[in-house]
Image 1: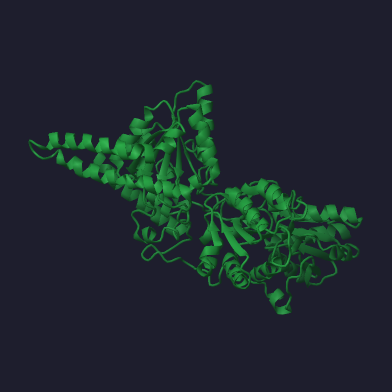
Image 2 (image 1 turned 180 degrees about the vertical axis):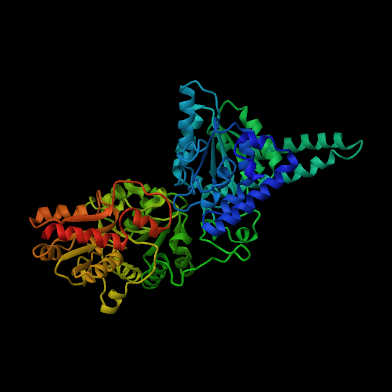
Length: 624
């Protein structure tokens, strides 16, 4: 049926007995495509019926739907005209794994980081009211996103404003890892009332009994509603109602009939309302139901077993980091680790195996994590906050105000630094240098490989100020470093290869590419020095002065050129009154699409062959 559905109007034409087949077909398509392309599977399998119900009840795209985080929008894409393009999901030039306004009029707002949907939806609702329009605005929010503070700021504002807005709480008891905190406990209490949903179904069957069925059903139904009112209203439903929302639920998120009835009621609300929907992550695919964490964001896999295709033979940098941190923690009981709902993604699940009581999972709350780390440090502990580079953007103020101004020994471990790959522009970690380098007292490091990352970790325990370490996911080692026996030395850049024609100052993940570019040039008769600039702040001024006096300097980074390593080096060279770099190679002033990492590097000119050509042309321009 999917090939004949491209709008909410098409869905409304389907009969009730066709809907189950449609949902089954959607799940088959999800499993098939994600098994080939990778992506977010468990969350999308869990939201199939809810997404279908939303588009059947509401008049989309006139009625606007905002998905929180947005990774669970695959079903939405399948039934809004993108079925024939769905095989290109997350592929270079294909459709995005997140809502994209340029893709469809059904995508009214782009989301890639958690806890933003209610704020965005409230803005859309207020715009509607100011323009005197009358369409509906719906925010679909996972319970994991409700561990983020922005949701409460938006809920407080929306409830106070009395603006018509529908918030659908998709409660599957997980974000990426199982949810934590007081909110999770609160929702667990609300789920207790889900027993009423089961009872309701059983009581409904009574109405089919001849003669006594309907009267018995009526009596029991009234008694049930009375006890639910007495037992649940003040204790469990007060939170949302106190904020000014009308509450519906909990509703079985895999029961289309119940979902549609509830959504129809919610449409009549003139004030903000919350619909609490219970779903199961991975629903309909046994492997994902058993291991929802593993199938949150997955690479390609074999459908029959759920095993990953082409599983990496070496551990990721995050895995290596966590093992090293655990080794350090055995010797120093001050060491603690912090994650914002990402223990598996950052590798800290390995740390937790040894020290479960010394890992703090704060939920999707990076701002809180940074300030809590500052408090831990002020209290005499040594906190290490591991976070995806692109999510680190969310705690910028806390990094400055709470950590750096007090010169506290907090270590920010910025995983997935550089171009992120198939998740696209919301997940590329390419803005951190611009955020970190201007901060007084902040030491900024960028290891060339996982071995150097571990060496840096060992060094951090010896100093007493803030440190940020940015590193790529790739756990491969650089043989030149290993063969030469070079180890990390704070503030010193190591020369991996010597050459007379130019000096390449590369940092982090680009050291490998700079070495490859150097080999290409060497085969053409050009000799370049390649430096591993592992300490980005402070710079190695001795190496700068030495090379600037005898050959042209070129900087290389997997970061935006604006505000990046190259600009930082250039400014310092001016202050030192030495020759500035003749070229700064990095990412130009553009947002990068989604696709394989190697392909995206070519888009921005960071492929070794492209770099070799640019360096060759620069050297020739200078010498001519």
